[in-house]
Length: 337
Image 1 (cartoon, rainbow, N blue to C red):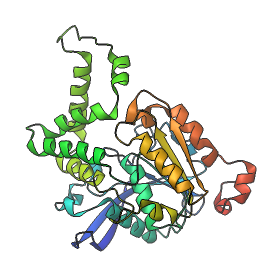
Image 2 (cartoon, rainbow, N blue to C red):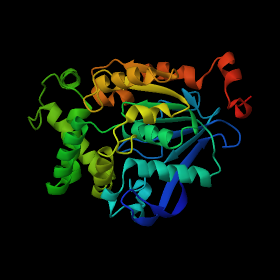
Image 3 (cartoon, rainbow, N blue to C red):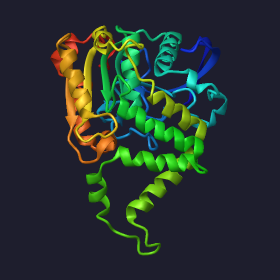
């Protein structure tokens, strides 16, 4: 069930003040009965993370890696993503917001829900970046921080791609459709497309199959995602910065008390694996409770949604702990018996 919290008089990074309506959903056990996992969605995702239409149902659900019979799963919608037609939530002044503002909104919402401790914060793509931002904002909040196919900063490469997206969104006669077509080319890789299509043409329209695939994804997103939502989410991607503008990312990451589990994708053309590995090495010199896993795939950024078996294997030790880990875990008092 979709619920809503009102954050009154929220002051964003630009100094503007407004009321924020934050929509969210709970899945699985009640918050007082089990460890709580906060799941952050990707750019075109939403709070529907499990169930028949859940976008991460291969990871979250009954008897899945994140078992909703054992955990309480909480998922917020990034305000302005338009889920379930909440058009009144859109930020007309969206460029005044940064991703750290979304983290602050989440932190205030958790306080209103009387949630002071999380077993984990997990998210993919911009959702993983938001996990970084919230973990730095509230260093003692979560026992595990799991950013997947993401980063704690907006690189020049990321900003460049988002700039092209912004031009398409503001200048195309079919903006959501065309921007999505462009985005699909850096969510995948040349090898992924070659394997999928092998240069084949459609016998009916004589278009290459890859062209029809791009057109399909453009139409599909256009039918369920609004232009305002896309502009907002694309803008937020350019504002990832746990250093709060001073460029000292390592000092910011060092403050995080929970265990950090980075999951990268070796072929990711959006959030580069090299950046994640460099971050891991540098942070590991400052704190010892950090590790990294690499999804091996030809499918690029989208591999975090495609290579479910690999992701489950990496995450299983966190969400299905051994007896020793269970006894040492500070959430054990609310673990299901």
